[in-house]
Length: 496
Image (tube, rainbow, N blue to C red; front, side, top):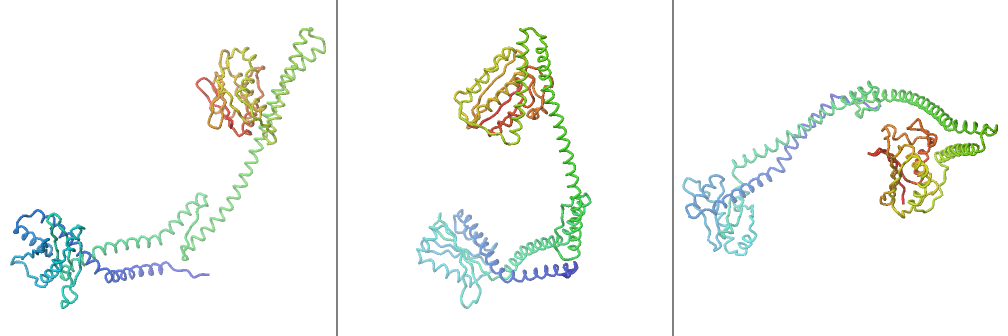
């Protein structure tokens, strides 16, 4: 078993490391970067001074103004300025008596500029580039490590070059630079300490917050939350114990929930099966009761010679009609059974669906005329589909039957075709009452009837639309129903 690291030791080690690293960084930074920082500061200062001088110098017109301007910049920045003309003439401005003479610096200035006088190529080059150049040079060998900094800036308007000279030696300037350097350094150091303190605080508080969060979740019987504390101290041990307790409780609760869910699922399935059985028996009984009663009654009447010869023909027709309705119901039930179990096979062929729609509509002309219903067709000619002719005919027949059933006298049924890229949409809209929103999806369920009281002539079996939905699905299409301003529209979409 690993030995636990106490929190007090961790705090001591972290605190010690923070201060040790902080001191080391100070020493290393001062050793490696101070000189570069100091020289870079002087370079930026002299560039700024000479650039500002250039802008004011371009506005001067007399020697007195130039001399005063040079003396002003020397007093403000300790930078000496000289000007080299294209003719080779050097303007070494003499400072007034109250300015402290700097003999060595003046000599260096003179020597440095004199090197430029005969070098016309160098003069033209810097004028062409029109950019400043900075030089860092030792004064003289006998002066030891002392250095001067020179910044050269061309003035194209006057065809002259400005030379700015400054020394890197003065102690007061070095001290001011050091102060500015340490201001930046201590700002960074403070930021580092803040960050380190934040991390340090998180090391202590974050695990405790996580443990508390997990405990609150457990109190609410939510055991999915886990402590992610990986430390080997007392807090880590507490987190591990809490996770172990959470796992045990979750396992027990999960097992109980699964058993309860399984029980509820089984109960619900049994309820649904029982409900489906009752609905199936009721629906089939309802659909078969009337035709069986009629067949039985009329058959007994014919057997007992109750009817005249003329009436016999009529009642035989009724018996045959009711037999066909029962046959249709049984066939629909068989089709739906095959469709739902996946054993239904389509016999696909290519045909013009507009011709199929026209021939199907003709089958309803007698009923439509009897109900005084008008059918308006807006079809797209010569639309070829690859589908099962008989089953698509069954789909159109079922939807039209449903539309006629819900269309009032003098109403209109609109049959439309719309081409959608690689698909064709067939829509049948009937004028009449709209379907309640909560029933729009249920009308595709088998034996579901929106209108509970139906005529015998078009009473329906309650499974026609269920058959439609399954046939269209097998063809890779889709079907839907929606309320419109005129009534209700059923449509289905087939791929071309």
